[in-house]
Image 1 (cartoon, rainbow, N blue to C red):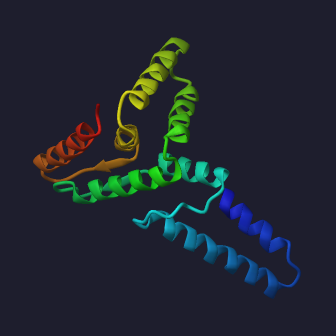
Image 2 (image 1 turned 180 degrees about the horizontal axis):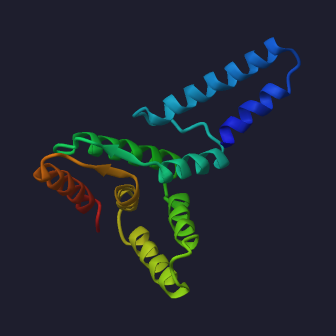
Image 3 (image 1 turned 120 degrees about the vertical axis):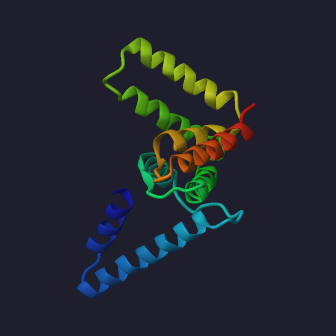
Length: 171
């Protein structure tokens, strides 16, 4: 929404239809280039503002990925690794990722104040007492990545792969 608004604002700020079209194309091409750089396995710093970084993290936190034939979990593990890498590039110390998890919990109207405080304490423990990737993986696995398979053993193998991936980053 934020990025689309930026594109619309730029398009409306120009005069002729041709100028508007060029402005939108330029912004979209620049955005594509920035996103390509973000997901590429390289050491370059993402070229996003703090607000854009937070918004992308929020989108990642809210996305739902379903593998309808997860098998041994190759696709879900691949997408987990890519998402963890992107989160690392956007938020190297997990400050905003932690903030998103706490905000999401505070917005939950089904929990009492006591339950919220206990869960916030648990979130703090997860972030503070483990490797940085542990918290990234844990919340992505719990909230974003889902898989099913016709063979029940296949989903168990996928779960095992995720579990092992978490253990690697647990202190």
